[in-house]
Each structure stands twice: as C-alpha cells, then as structure tokens.
Image 1: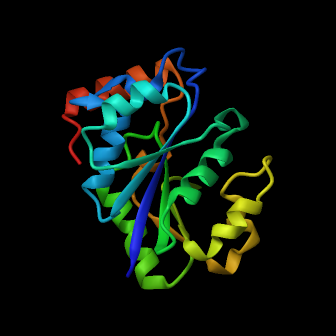
Image 2: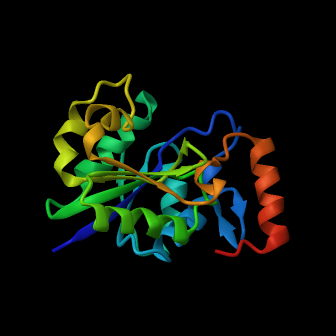
Length: 203
C-alpha cells in the first residue's frame, strides 16, 4: 500500500513571535488549523502533528481535526528532534512523508500536490519544491531514508539528506513564493494575516 503521510512540526516555543504562534488567528481559524486544512485539502493522506511547547493548548484546538499527534520531549534541541519524533511515530508501512513547518500556513494544496506528483512520477526519494531557485517546503522524503534521518547530527537539518544523496533529489518549480514564507515574528504575521484576510485566503 502506498501510504503517504504528512508531518507538521508544531513543537517550537515561538520565542520570536512572543506568544504561542500556532494558536494565533489566521483566516477562519488559527495558524495550525490552516496548515492542517491545507494538508487535508491536498493528496497528502494522513497527518502527524509533532507537539512540544504549549502542547495541551494545541491539542485542544486540533482535536476537532482527523489528525494524529506525538509529543517531542526534546523540542528545545531544535527542529531536527521534531522531525525524528514525527518519523518515529509513523507506521512501518508508510512510503514517504511530507514535512511541513507549522508556521507556513500559506502553502497551498496545489503546491503540495505538485510535490506529490513529482515523487510518484520521478521515482526519486527526495522532492524539494522551489521558487526561482530558492528551496521551500514541504520537503518530501521516502521511507528508505528513515534510518538515515535518525543518524543525522543535531547540528544538521533534514535538508542535509539532499547533500548526502544528490542523485536521488528532484526539485519542482511551484510558481509561487508561498512555499518560502514562514511567520516568525509579529511583523511577518500581521502582514500575511491582513493580506490573507483581504483576499479571502483562496486556495
């Protein structure tokens, strides 16, 4: 069975934002729910949300959605620890996982589906969406790299895999810079919140 999963990384402490980022209003709901909704409206299949800071509050919000979650007790060690937590929580039968930072609610289902199509059509094990030469998210990784991910040093991120296995990488131009935009601070949040509200957040 071709089991495709999404891993949403929502364990961070939101230090630069100054308040729990995942729970901030965005569109009709919150940032984390917008990310989940975009994933659910794509071909991405099942969804695993990795939690850490503010986990109890986030669980209350996402409990209305058909997602699973895991708790990363080591979230202070950085994003790679959450990536590893997410992969460890997936079933053995999964074929590949798309990895989403939870502060990127602008990634549309269309971009997600382009990454999935590239995976299915190319046979490559690492698919990276790009816009005008810049790499964005979600990064898709085949299950055959699961053990390699567990062995990555803490100083490295998931993208180190692309450098380790360049022959198995394909980049797909999405035609949008939404794959590059994260909401790290209040200025970025207010800008995209207002834009999203003005134009209705059409997917």
